[in-house]
Length: 252
Image 1 (cartoon, helix red, strand yellow):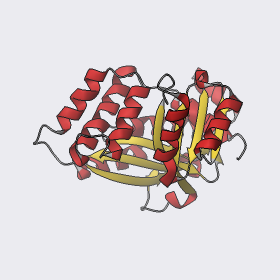
Image 2: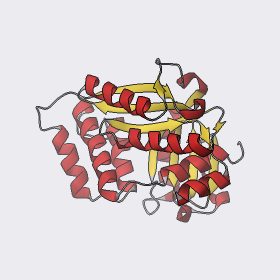
Image 3: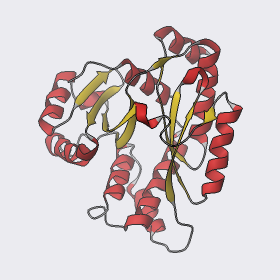
C-alpha cells in the first residue's frame, strides 16, 4: 500500500468548495436518469445505475427523489445522452480531464472550449493529458466510518490497492475493473449502517505539478467554471498546492 498522497489531500480540499446541496442533488439526479435511460431501471442489471443510486444514498438523497430520477429515465422521449471526455491544459501547464454527459455534443464542446480559452487554458486532443493519469476506482467514506487502521484492514481484505486517510475521511483506491467487487465487499463488512459517500471511477495523476500565485488563482477559476457547466459530470487535474497556497486561496 502506498503512503498518503498529498495530491489526494489537496484535491479533496479543492473538492470541498462543495456545491450547495440543491446543485449536488441535481447532478446526482441527472446521473441516475441518464443511467436509467441508457441501461434500464433495474440496478441489479444496470451497473451504472447501481453506482448512481449508491452515490445518491451516500449523500442522503431522499428515496422519493431517487425513484423519480429513475422513473424520469423511463419516461420515453427526450434526447439521447452520450458520454464525452475532453482533455486540456490550464495555467502552469496543469493537465485537466473533463468528463461530460450531454444530449448536445456541439453545445458541450463549445462551452468547455470557451471555459478553457477564457481562463488561461487551452483544449487539447484526446489522449494529450490522460496518458499521464491512471483510471482507478475510488470509494470515499466519512471519518466516522472507522479508524485509519480499521479502514485499512477492511480495504485490504476487500481487495483494494491503496488507502489514504485524513481528517476529511478515508479514500480507498481499487483497480478499475475491481471497483464494484471491492465496494460490495466493504458493504458486506460494514453493514448498512455505514454507507460510502461516493463510489466511482476517477482519473488519478501519476505526477503532480506545483502551482502558486496568479497561476493558482486562474486555475481555480477555470476548474470552478468547468465544474459549473450543466453538461460536465467530473473534472480532474494534476495540480499540487502547498499548505500556504491552500490557506491563501481559502482567504481570497
